[in-house]
Length: 185
Image (tube, rainbow, N blue to C red; front, side, top):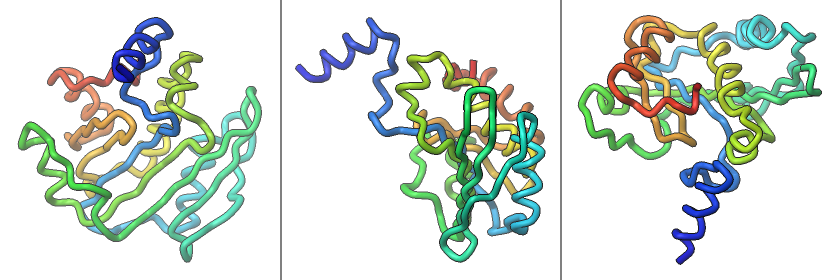
């Protein structure tokens, strides 16, 4: 019965059923080896990616400089972003239906996430702002994209996009292949 109610509400209000109430926009880069930019480079990339509306401030670090919190002024107020790095495999193993999608999960040894803090996918979907937030996160990903990145994973969406050269080329490959990337539109 609950599943039926969720599906009905989703259809009527345009909210995707797949989001839990506290899912937030996040981009996770699955890395071949644990090579992370130096803290100064992370801050410089944040300024380049998010500093158009004003200065980006590093407001805190956690876990012995393995997690970073940034604030950024926008026309809509202050936005918060976090970046987390880890020298371990990301969460649960990917269970992808195609070998090309599963391979990055099998080979990665570290990860980095770029998160929009304090925002939920459900609310952003209702406001038709989710694609914009993902694009903001992907701009940062573009700044640190390299051959060491095996794939980009969108946890709230459950979507893995392997690295096929440049980030834009990889996203285009995903679209051509039929991956559900409508959350980026």
